[in-house]
Image (tube, rainbow over all chains, first blue to last red; front, top):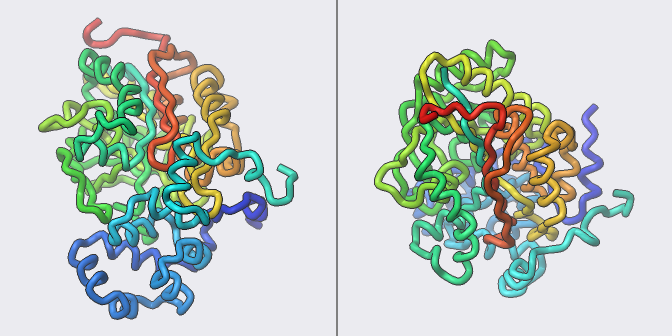
Length: 129
Length: 287
């Protein structure tokens, strides 16, 4: 049996396993559709109608509508797929990624310029790693 | 006989590609990043291989979740830059080396590496950013490129040991090709970074430095590093570094370090870059 419990011990991190991929398949397929310029235009013009064309769960639909990237990760989204959403919104990786950290874009950029987030205190939930 | 003449590894951060495309490389933020590639650009002028086997990962561009090949070899004549959601990068179409690629596909599968063969493939920033870093903005890329896409998006990617072994098999396969070709192998991605969740922005310079050191002189034991160590210590996206081991495996047991560069940050990521030369033979076509 595959045991992925070790991943849950990494704080603030969602490892995109086959199980998460299975749950997030339609959400990530929707994201892929935004690689086409005409689909991006349709999505921007009427998000609700566009999202309704995809067989997403209510949770997935709400997470996208709210642009809540942590919530999208929790319902099976993968960051490389989700990047199609923030690219459509005209956001950079830094702008979008910072929204998951509870920091403002400026605070996040300041942290990155100072050498990034230190691993100290972010290794292990249990403290055993 | 074809031969591996050098190995190169570099991060393939999309923002670095955008900095090139938008003419921002001389700005304060980017200047120190691109300065780290000055040596390499000069070296690349004097040392131009007939083909580059470029190990990279696709970022949900050519491969959706419908198909997730662990190793996919680009055997096409050419590869178009992908539209990743911002429009395709304004870079030349990548010219393949389909003759060598066809040989590699056959030799590697018979050597028990069950590759997926790609006869059509759009290539994203994972492949085109390294070309921009080394060759700038030419009208046409000065080298032919054989893409080797590695799954690092859905867990699990191949193990480090499998990547190192594939590199060794690539060397054997190149050396059994009957044309007189100089071939480089590039590994891309990394270094430490995490693009998701509350831990995003993680950088681990100690991990990255040790990885670079061991890549040069201790690759066999580095290849045994388990996935969990990459994920925990170098961030969820730091696991891209397993791809550097394909490059390292292709160079043989001993290498000379020609150039190294490390810088934090570019966007969300630690930039790492290294150029290596196999030391067991220097017999390039030029002598």
